[in-house]
Length: 508
Ligand code: NG6
Ligand code: CA
Image (cartoon, rainbow, N blue to C red; front, side, top):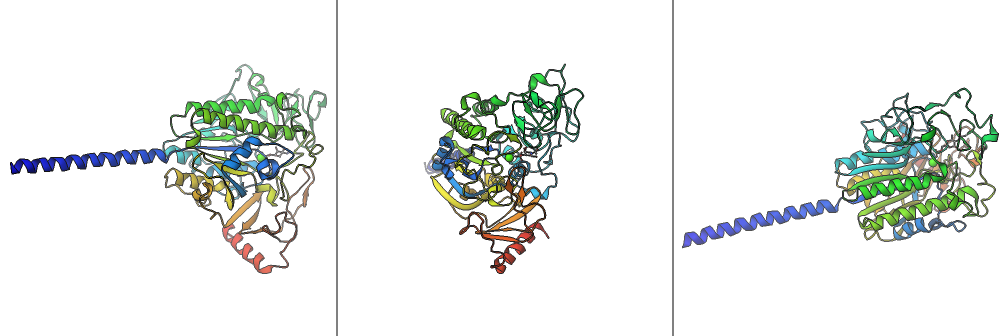
């Protein structure tokens, strides 16, 4: 009997150990699931810090973006890495400072891919953690290796640097080729009408903005006088591919549908979507239902359109039951510009609107408005509504997302700031190097320092202050957010401190 008792005891213990083990395993599985939220980056093009209501705009209404800002963390010191597109996008996806890659500058539509296919990227890191990864929208990081044949599979591109799915425009809305590319294939291409692209010379007999202004519906101001597509003169020459050419006024709806379809298709697995909107970059082509809504001309109209798009996209996430399990980051690739090469009333109809908010400069500038942009994180039920003055940069997303999904991947320039992004901490970056048209400047604590640069103090074509000066500039942003008072002479110790820290990072 005693023996039987013993056996029973052993058996019960074993069973309870087994069941305990099973429980732990279940728990681990559950925990694992819970660290796999979806991640979406909504990235606008040239949207300024002051272009959204949440950051103080009163002349333009952006209720849907404001809802994200007011329901999430609204960063007042959120930065793009650069004051232009390609470098900012490079830094966002790779976590590497763009000034470390000499090719990370505004690219023509024929440029080769500038991300090394062996390099770490956000989608690659997430893929390794079981995520499906997609991009819908603007790419502008180059395609192919030098001589792209647009009539064959275009590669390498987004699919070779970590994206399982890509639906993109190659460069910008104002650059050829003006076609959509899905997983490397031009959408709707008629093989009997092959595409040819050249950025140096025109194809014989093809009209251009320069020679045929009578064929244009939008007038060029500077640049933008090559091939004409849909009445809009572009940068670069294009021949053929007529059936594949996009409709500019439908682009926002088209990308929205792509983004909605993507999340619907992948809602049952963890996914990462990089949704890169084209607004309010030139050419500004609002859909007819948005024409005139802002009273500010096409630039205002496409901002209202972009806001509507964000609202529709969020509605889709809600309808699919995804909002509670999705971290959304909303930002812009660089600061605002009014006249960026077309006569489109952006300057004439600006009224009292201030696209840069209280900041100095704009796109292309080393002053704050070049890189300090709308920056919002939103996660229903997980992020408490909050305004954060912590310094964060898009370059930090890679390491921070890695932390979120329990990945060991870290990239040096990319600071792991997950708690800051989730609004749980205000311990942001202490330092940041910003870039604008191949020049760099430095932010440390409350201070901004711009080293001397040759060249014009104003980019006359776009009417934006570049930040160039023969002298060092030093600003205390806490007291002087508009960078009106250069303290380089009156505070030499601070200037020295920033120069030393800056050069240490630059490796000088
Ligand atoms: C500039 C274009 C500008 C815009 C910019 C890229 C001219 C004169 N200007 O070269 O219109 O396309 O490149 O903008 O061509 S970005 O947001 O993609 O960096
Ligand atoms: Ca841009």
